[in-house]
Length: 118
Image (cartoon, rainbow, N blue to C red; front, side, top):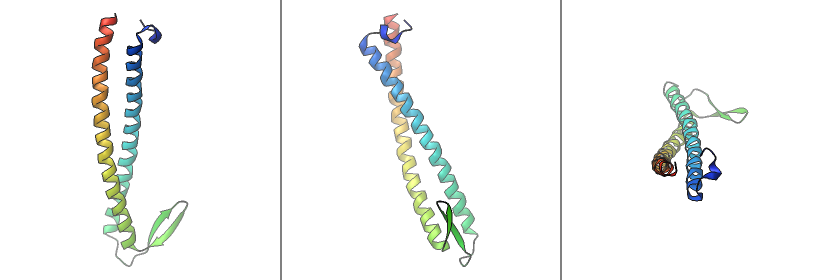
């Protein structure tokens, strides 16, 4: 029974849900990786700014240009961004966990159902 259309409709639907969840999981993992990269960059920038004297000129990227800002403003912006990213990372981790749990349940159910169909 390699052809999906030969399976009962409820089983076809379950397989479709499983595939959708797999796709969702891949998207979540990709988002998490991008977020972790941005968090790492923010941490590195904040660490670098720790050793910079207050009176030193600091530049912040704004699209294709650099804009001069006070060290204090840049540190504040980076810290706020990092806090937002940390919060977002927690939300993504929860979504990933819930999606993995749902994937596992559907996979177990599919294995049982497919065992009966054969």
